[in-house]
Length: 227
Image 1 (cartoon, rainbow, N blue to C red):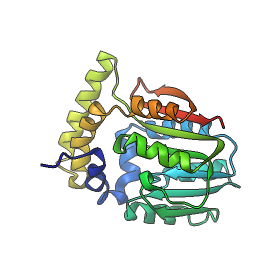
Image 2: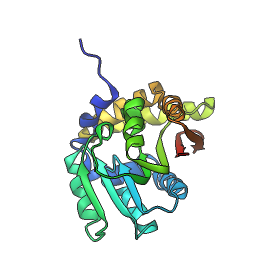
Image 3: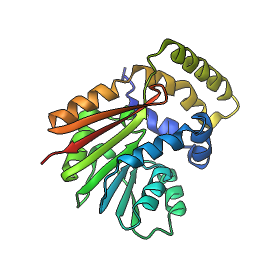
Image 4: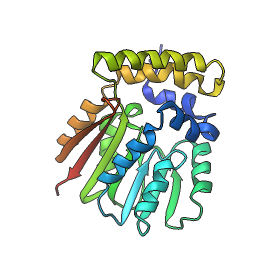
């Protein structure tokens, strides 16, 4: 019997959720998604080329474009419905393009000053994703990865668990999101994405830095290419 990998959850989570993603991610994070993305933006250095992995509906891509209006920006995602929304949302930004590709198997003809992604690490193999990023990163380039982490504080963790129980119940009334509300907390509890990615980024010779956010409910991991 095949063991389901985190990446197998991607089509289950996202095939039918594109139209409501923006509002759901804002509501279910109590608006913290906006704060987390602002923290990601602070870490992006002045760049001529920026790659947004798993760009989804283009929430972060749009903010990057507003902060770096002269940069060439490429958004990558594997879900066509999400890319279609991103394209409509950012159609006025002529220096942005969107491509359907697997982040672990990137095949682009250029390298980037900065590669950034929110919510992708937990789904991917850290070795494959980091190798893919390194192959598309300029000397002195920067990788910025953000995702959920399981809080360590006992009180926060108790509240976190209660919250996901409530989301599980809500999932009965929003069937397109049912799989997400049921399986996402399990994935967050079991993933070692932060340690795995930091280890593999360091193996590639990059300097790393962590920033814990919102009582350790999410974390930003950055890696800077020294050569």
